[in-house]
Image (cartoon, rainbow, N blue to C red; front, top):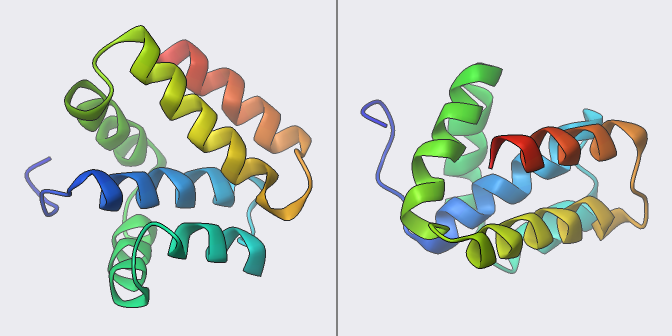
Length: 109
């Protein structure tokens, strides 16, 4: 976590939602709008730049590092997974790539 800013809960949630939205390799306008309900456009752009500058393993490590801060219990982890599933469904689809990412996240978290 040393090479990125300390994010508040809304910023971290937006990062998670962007991670979920990108699972099928595209972020739809509906998915972006769902993220913009958490943060303003400027913050979204900053998170987007940070997201796209990271490798896949760095993204996972980042999620795991913040997970303990914002989702330390099983109930809070389920809230995290529910948040991500809502983002997967923002465009009305739950693609195979998104389903596979959800399985990986359940195992990691």
